[in-house]
Length: 147
Length: 443
Image (cartoon, rainbow over all chains, first blue to last red):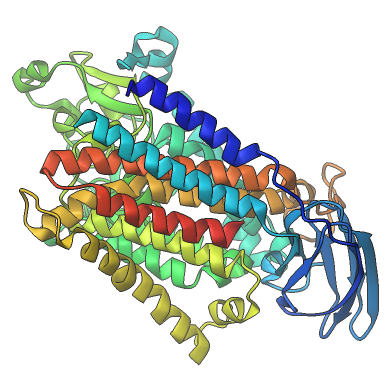
């Protein structure tokens, strides 16, 4: 096969893997409440899973010093003093995987105090794996074409 | 793509031949470096508000790994202030023509240490303590000062820049990754060098010093040990030195067979993966272990860290290439094929650093106004609120870096395998699996 045509096919396949819309299973949105304990330098639980459209209530409890929770992608945050509980409520209307981070300087490892929110499945990870696989296939094809 | 000689442009050539532009940058860098040491030692212990942490581990690191190394190779070494005081002391001059009479011991570096093993060890030493180093200003201050004094000490004992060439923990990986950069310093005509009397590029002349990196430019075929100090451009009497633009990773076409460089590739690849899990992952137990130096948990962390780098990754790699037939013995095949890990490791670091830097870059704005965390407000930005930047494009950018790195490495593996007449498939599979792990850790 013409190498340029192969490359074109691979690029098109890559675009499909990266951007093609995926079928969405209809799920009735629910209200979900999580109690997250924040202590130097981790959240417990450190990973939350919800479905797109769910209303999420995060009750943040700080167990030692003042901690915060900033949600990447949603640009919302909350802070809790030790012993206090603060609640952050939002509708998880953006699917994907998001990090949440402490937004109050809480000690040396503060910049690395991180948790994870998965809204639906982590499609981007699977798309990225697909792209990596496609990349390897592309390189192997190009090796075969040269030999 | 053919090479483009940048030194044919008079402005660039004149700027590189003159010592003054470089000296001006050196002085700014040296002032910044000394200020970072002082800030670390006397400034606030809160890392995210201290110049030493914010400017060294966020601003400098971002420039180094996202721009300087990928595009300029050893460009950072060309302006690094660490060797300067020692070099000035060694020469007994800042700008004057070199004096032939050595002022200090001026010993040759021991032959058995003429490799990058010491740089591998110095990097690993910092890497094992990195959670403390990255977050604790006084430790950063002490380490920066120690590097400065080590460079001064070695300059009084050994000739040239022994610290940069053989000990600097940063210089080791910059050298490795500089092979991928689209810029190089090379001679124009080999015959001119062969006939050149006195070899002033190596031995020095009234116009400049002999190569501080102990490299004879006439024999340069890789970027690894050329520090882009530009001395040879000044000393060459035949105008035979050029700075060229070239395709990315041109040096990797001829794979190295050195084990020190092969293990440097594993050290960097493994460190990026471990940091992605420990620092950017959600697992508090790993952060505790990495931070609490001297505890049992830290010793286990250090053991696992070293095991991943020296046993697990090289072990799987060796298992993969064990059955492949090649013209070289296994040890040399291992070293040659490990060349493929150089672009992959660089892109792993780019992907890791994108997350770390974009999340914490807003600290730079506040630290500009209050570099010591003493309540100053020099530019009115001291109270700038922390805000992660560009988080919506972070995941796609990381995917681009990692998948791009995988393609780059697979192509490099193919070339390295062709050189030694072996199969590239096991190396490509190894790169693919490590990329999957990195994708899982970061996304």
